[in-house]
Image 1 (spheres, rainbow, N blue to C red):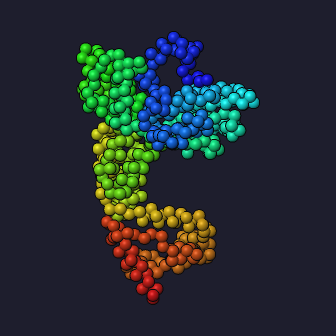
Image 2 (image 1 turned 180 degrees about the vertical axis):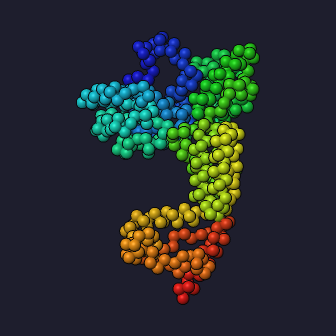
Image 3 (image 1 turned 90 degrees about the vertical axis):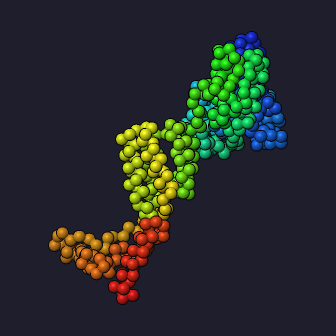
Length: 451
């Protein structure tokens, strides 16, 4: 039994169900009905692959399908629904509450007493919060239900660990452009479910354009084809050209979620491209994030961080340049201000690199955590009162401006940390001069101590 294809009160195979299916979008009508019709995901459902074997044996365990929109998560669930002998129930975390699901789980527990299996499919499972996901645990653990969840978000962050440990995670990959072209041709030829009855012609470059602009999302490609078909029918040509495809596309679909994992993937790619001195890659990832709707001021903040973390004192002017880019964006706004961010990214990529200060400060913080909080040495304390002077505050302090070379023979760390050195400058860019100056200071101090 499956609730997938039984909308409202229409039973599967009834005229009502057929009419509703005919009104469905092309992407829904062309949804594969079996593993043989499925294109892509060969690493999961190819001959002999684990998921295919599970489906064919009807012994699917609890699992999570993870992938971007339009790669076949719901399709795989529906194929399982068609092949399983278990009761198959679908919920969407967008429209269903935990109350309804608890009732289903209670019914499943009763059915299990009579050796009947229940498979519960939850689309957008990441939309359930941690407490709601806890409700599934006892039923999944006992095997009362087999849970299949679909999510576009990284399960490591969005699914509670206890539930995740009881499910197999299958990662679905974006479809390749040539696969999407094949599916579009299939839709144009299919007279039962697709557009075959309209007898449309389509140029290959038009289909390739639609596939390329779908970003691996088959549903989006089908939607674009449906619009293109309407345009070609309206102008009487029934011929989908590249220009028709362009008009149907309007705007490229970029796979980007400002609150999801792809956000972090893209900013990571930008940062690492800058660190690796690759200006072209850095510009590309910056452009991808801007085109996806990322807040330019978020990018400006991250670019400033790159200046202090990866460029450091090898090119200290980089920090001012990045702050200026941020101010420029504030002044000009989009799109003109985005060019200032692009200039900053290119400069950072080409600038000499040093993480010496970043590393040194991190080491200092670790030592602060590991060692006791030493009092400030008396000679480094101010002595504004008589009592403080009597207690030895400021005694032995050496004023560097009165010393030869402006360097006094005086320790500025607590006794337990004397001689500790955290900052080790590189020989990159301006920091090479700082390294030479540091070496000079150490020699002066050693000479004054008679070393």
